[in-house]
Length: 411
Image (cartoon, rainbow, N blue to C red):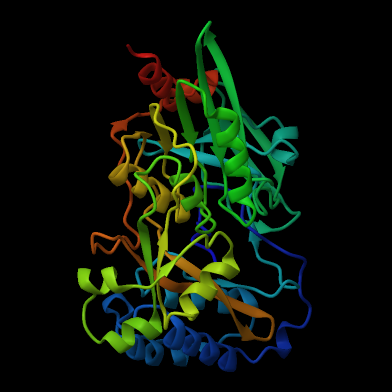
C-alpha cells in the first residue's frame, strides 16, 4: 500500500536495460488488460466523472497500431490522464528501456527552471552542474546511459555547455527515510529537527526513537519537503502532537463506495470500523479488507506528548502520506506550516500486474477526514508562505528553514 509515489519536479526518471523482444508483445491484449484493471479496481466507481467506457472505446483502435513499448507507454499515459487523478501510471517491464533524465532536481522560479539539487554520485555532479544554474533550454529525455547536451547559465552569469549522462538518481529513495538532530542555542534552550523523506514500513520505530531523543527540546522543526509519501506510519508521529487517540483518516475502497451507491456522508465516516497501529502497507490493506472496504485509521495516546512549538516545512514535492500528516497537523494541532503549497497528490495506491511484465499503479482507496471532507488530491496550504529566489539556490540559503527558526526563536 502506498499513500505515495509522486512524480516530482525532477530531471531524473526511472529506467531499466533495453528489452529485445518487443515484437513478441501483444499490445492489443495488453491494452485491454490495462483498461480492465482500471475499470475494476480504480477506487471511485464514477472515475472522477470520466466516462471510462467511452474512453476505452476511443483509444482501442489506436492500440491496434502500436508496435513497440515506447508507443504503448505514450498511449497508456494519454489514456490514463483522462481520469484526473494522482497515483495513476503505467510501469514498463524491468527489461524494457524507458526514458531517463539527468541526476538533478529543478525548481521553477517564475517561468524559469533552475537546478535545485544535484545527486552526489551522479555524472551531473561530476560534470559541474550545481544548484542555482539556470537551464537555458529543457533537457530532452533519452535512454539510460546516453549523453544529454545541457546548456546552463551559472550563478556568475557565464554560460557552460555540458554533456551529462542520463541516469536514474532519485529512486529508490534514501534509506532510512527519517533522521533527526538538535542544536543547543543557549544554556537552557535546544531546537530539534526531524527530516522525513518517506513514511515507510519501519518508520514508526524510528519516530519513537526520534521523539524520545527530542522530547525535551524547546521547539521542533519537521521537514517534509521532498517527502513523496509512503504509508500510514505517519499517524504514529501525529500521535505525539494531537489531543489523544482519535480517528485521523478514513480509507474507502471501490467495494465500499460501489455498495454505498451514493455520495459519502459524515455518518458513513463516523461508522467506519476502527483500525489501530496500521503502520505497514500490509497492515493497512488487511484493515481495509477485513472491514468490507472501509477503515478508520486512528492515532494513539502516547506516554509523553510533545507540547512545545512545532513548525512543519512543506513544499511542492510534499505528497501523499506526507500530505495526510500535514493536513492532520494543520487541522488538529497548533503546529505552524511553513513553505509552499504541497503537491495535491493524496490518495492510497496499489500496483496491479496487467501481463507481459507490465504493471499499472492506481488509487486503491480514497481518503476522507473525520469531518466528512474528501481530502483526495487536496493540496495543503502553509500558514506562512515563503518564496525562494535564485540567490537562495546559489548561496545555499534555505529560506523555509530560516523562517521556521525565526518563528521558533521569537519571544
